[in-house]
Image (cartoon, rainbow, N blue to C red; front, side):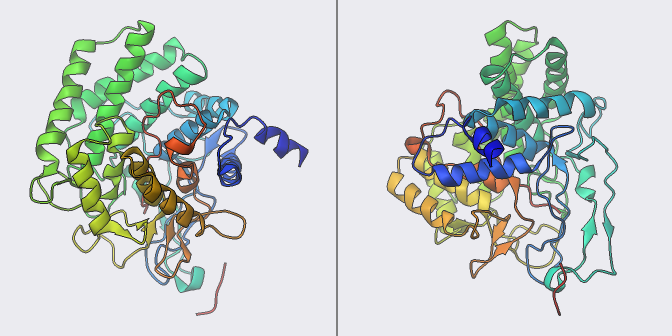
Length: 410
């Protein structure tokens, strides 16, 4: 008790929802593997996104995306040692693997840095409440997910700004990553939700490529670090114009899931949080209205509609908890504070008896998916207008949990 109270005393948060914020901070700390600094997405495997369905995945690994934004959450609350430990994990266990089309990084690693995470099914297990198959390993490790580069560079930028200036070796790695992003941002990928239905030109992936380049430019300018700034700036602007021209549907008056389409996706809630556009921009406000109409149910948010945007899997899923917290943030930034507070406080009622969240919430309010989930907890801080946390620079605040791919009687 003394240890945990002493650790929590380092938190900077003094706002209205202190108990829930600190519960989430404790959860993130407990999802950290102390010997290496690795942060896992969840401590479980194959807890179903649909009871009796096949959407059952192994989350006991270090997703670059998840861990990078856990690092941000820790920094924001004042826990710089945990952020430093993850940076050390990157130094020791995550090697850049060249500049080919698959990218210099895998999307996930083992807690000891291992890269072979081959997915296997265990047919001798019936799964939680007969939700088979039970899986170990995760074949999403071989996917291309361009958004991870924005998540990682954003977190390195914030670590450099709030904790410790990064080393010259780390800057060389940033240069290599950003140069690769400049040459590969325009290719299709599997996206943040790790769909198994084929690659597409996902808007969110483009957005986070923009973030990767934009944050690297900020670091180079602020510290006078060497970089090909003219090329970086030109590529950053090219991505911006492509998103604005091909990612916005005039029919729906909304930014869409992928280019030249009318399908909506809750991942675009990140656009104002990533500082890509103003939260009061007319195009954004109409997007927020469209998302509310299509993907929001009683303040809970679906990440997308698999009926109109097939993801290669059978069945349906619940509302995505991190998207519900993003929605709160988007409402607050758009000036709809009463709606944001109501949605936030309603969302808190779905936690279990000790304040923990799984990945999703089912139609009857039950927890679905692996549990507890880091991405949900890193996002469960209150709207910015009611928080006393550091206000300088809040880009990429809560990037979403990727939809990845006990016995009970049948």
